[in-house]
Image (cartoon, helix red, strand yellow):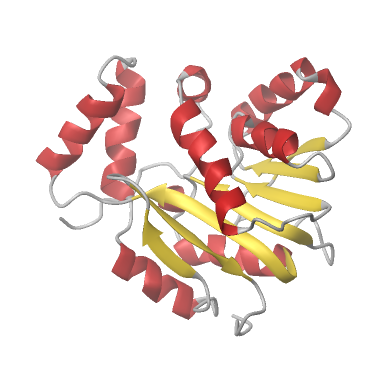
Length: 230
């Protein structure tokens, strides 16, 4: 099945943002943080960047997992940023270590300038990008030499009927707006051969891609291990 790009790059509509924020993504989000700990067991960096943080669930989980680190979560959606900031305020003990910022990757300049991070992570952002290389270039620009990188996203199913079955299996009881968004995301997702080509184009061929569930892949590795400037 050929990829069908999403109509909108950002989940900026309040209804969509709210539905996403209220959905239960605890299983894949906790799995994401567990995968980071598994792939980088010695990580003790001071700064972590979460690209496409959405409602900041993974951002918070990372802050709890790594109490020595300051976490910056960014998202291009102002609706999501508002939700994320409210969530952080409710986690008062983390507020001094977590910062939420607006950044539309690929459309706005890198707000961090020469600042870099010891880890750069992203979950479920790649398939939203109009140009996937924008995400990989942002990772390269924001990562310190030797930084840990973990990206997780959906794998495009082989057919639309398979995509619909995945929606029913994992979001059958969710609101229609969320089921529709999930289907669109599956149709807009990439396959591993496409990811490999993107990494080569972005100068990140040293990063590895592997399947971790029936609907997810990860890309992981360290910046500077043979990477060339894109």
